[in-house]
Length: 259
Image (cartoon, rainbow, N blue to C red):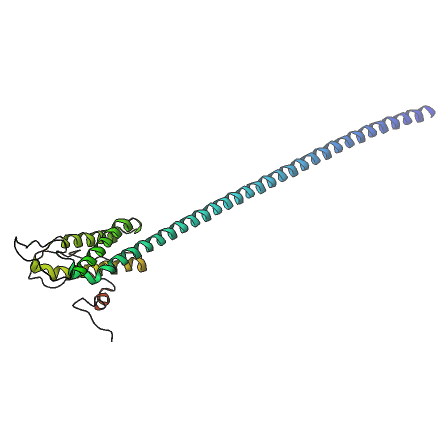
C-alpha cells in the first residue's frame, strides 16, 4: 500500500511538472503572440502615421505650389494690367497730340493747296494773291506741326490702320502744298478737310471703342481726280460719328447750324 501511494505521488509530481511546463510554454507562446501582435499594431500604427504625415506633407506641398502659382498669376496679371494701362495712357497722349495738330489745320485746309508753289505758274505771270501772306505763314506753321506730330506720336498709337491714316493725311497735305492744278485747288482743299475730319473721327473711335475706322474705297482722296467728280471725298463704309462731324465743321458744304 505504501509503495502504491509512493508511486502515485511520483506520478502526480510528474504530471504537475508536465502541467507546469505546458503552462510555461503556453505563457511563453502567449507572451510571444502578444508581443508580435503589439509589434504588428505598432508597425501598422507607424505606417499609418507615416502615411498620414506623407499625405499632410503632400497636401502642404500642393498648397504651397498652388499658393506660389496664384502669387505668380496675380503678379503676372498685375504686370499685364500695368502694361495695358501704360499703353492706354501712351495711346491717349499720342491721340491727343495728333488731334491737336489736326485741329490746328482745320481752318487752313483751303490755303494748303499750292502753298509752296503753283504748278500752272508761267514765267512773267503775276503771282496769285488769293491767300493773305500772314495766313500763308500761319498755314506753314500748322502744316509743320502736323508733320512733327506724325513723326513723333505714331510710335505709341498702337493701331497700324490709324497710324497709316495719319501718315497719309500728312503726305496728302505736303503733296497738295507743293502744287495741284489750279482748277482742282478748291476741291483739293475740300477733300483734305474731309479726310482730316475722317482721321479725327477714326482717332476718336480708337479711344472710345478700341479700334480705328475703315473708310472703304478709296481709302483716301485722290488730289488729281477728274473734275467731273466734284463731290468732296467721303468714306464709303459706315463710319460712326462721320455725319455729325461734317455737320459740325463750319467750312464743310454739309455744315448744319445747331437747332
